[in-house]
Image (cartoon, rainbow over all chains, first blue to last red; front, side, top):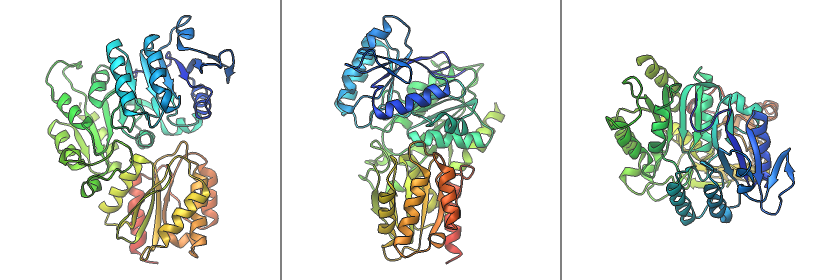
Length: 307
Length: 147
């Protein structure tokens, strides 16, 4: 199994006629994703790589089931495109666009919450359930994607798109495949947090361990630690909680408060933002924190063996 | 997106990327006792010219002996263009790429072409079987051997 997306997931692409969207649509199709339609207002009736293009999301949802939409429209149009998908009943939005205005993101997330939709991103590379489907640009061309991602028992969540691939590649190189890998998006505000997705992983019988790539800045890691610590109220299997291994990059940033490195959301403004403090809080909650990136596979294997 | 540069005092020039891998690589260099001369993040498929310009800029700084190029497995950035840019920057700075590039670890799109080019110039490259922190360790081991 996997979470969020699998081989049956029916995907649409909003902004499908854009240059980057055409490129990742090709990669998704090559990987076996079920891309059932694209949307670009004013371009309805055409097709992109055999995928029919419509003027609106509703034109597609009226005639068939849509499980997810990838939003690749220019930043100023993301808010309206997301509203459209939400109101048309699409349950999962994957927003790949960078530099979406923060107030637009807040409005999108508020409407998504009211309507019960899930949002990944913005500024995400997408989601992959290896061997089944990929939604977004994650992994690049299908041939490259197959080199980095293998099916298996490890869930991956990463604040960095590139490190979603890198981390999965490291696991694959060490014989550890992935159930699903999620690029969370590198912005200060993203649609889904580590903590919000944790119950999905805990409820997936095929996911035996979870690996996280974390960065300085923001409350995502502390919120996860709090949630992981909760004794009850979550989906748990056979009395076992899911082992979590985390790596936190950017320790050096503690010496340079106020300077943004890497992603928009990666900045140290206070002690709670530092890699060191995040490591401390996560360890307190029973999360295994790797000191070196290449230790991760051994720590995952140990966690799997202990179960 | 290419070319965010922050200066440090060390002797090892760094060209790193993308967003998360650059944080990982910089930490790894320091953890293994390396002295970074700079933090220079690239991404978003930079042109050969851009990478060559950054390489020249980093090598022009007094005390910079060698340069390490470390990125995550890339999907959108082309390995061969990064390789070409770094080699061009070395040559234009009057340096031998084989002696100047302490590590080149950029696997992914167009890697066969990139690796072929690096071989041609006698530069040792590291593929996806070598992790980011192992690449940093090797770059620093190469530095201490002196050259």
